[in-house]
Amino acid sequence: MQYTGVLKKMNTELLDTVQYYLDMNTDFINVNQLLNKTIEMSFVTYECLSCGLEKEIYRQGFCRSCFFETPSAGDWIMRPELSKAHLGEEDRDLEYEKKVQLQPHIVYLANSSNVKVGVTRKTQVPTRWIDQGAHEAIEIVEVPNRYLAGITEVALKEHVADKTNWRKMLKNDIEDEDLTKWQERLKSFIPEEAKEYFIENNKETEIKFPVEQYPEKPKSLNIKKEGSYTGKLVGIKGQYFIFEDNTVFNVRANEGLVVNIKVKS
Image (cartoon, rainbow, N blue to C red):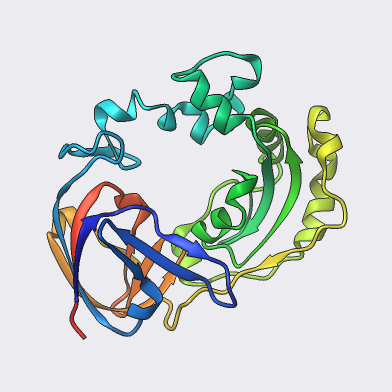
């Protein structure tokens, strides 16, 4: 079997074990079915996820010009506290920004490499947790817009991490935490504007990933530099492929790259 297409973040489905799907333009692959198979992956070219042109990818799957122009790459994406649609103020495209920012958002705690705070649209729960490789997570605040979620995250990250250690996450070097206790511990640090949106008596969500062998010393694959790679797929966690020789490949970090994937055995 052979597939060629532009890489995009894998789609996921939370079942007893997370199911992963790769949309390769004309093919839709259940990546779980490739476990324990040898895969040859090679870099072909680029395709910007915004304009669709064959231009070198700059960041987040976009070419340089699209990254600085498309509304889906505004600063408020990475820094939700900069959201201004609730004030009627435009960043790049007010209609788009209202559509995304003025909807329910969740501030959550997730445990991937450590307990961290994060923000996502309500419609992206539990997708966001899966993408971060969290084995447990809990919603702590549900607010009506992205700005309130952003200022809550800023306040809470003074008391808890807001980043994931990807190597520790992939090695499964983790400890179970009681996230309900963390939620109560952080409650008093929530900004006044968001206190009324605190979620009482919530429960953790547990997530199991399809991994048969965790890497002892993860080494990241740069498919553009290497050109091609062949290895046995032994796991999928977060947005990473995990191979038997400790090589790992971050699908999301390589969005916009056109690759050829050949399943050899």
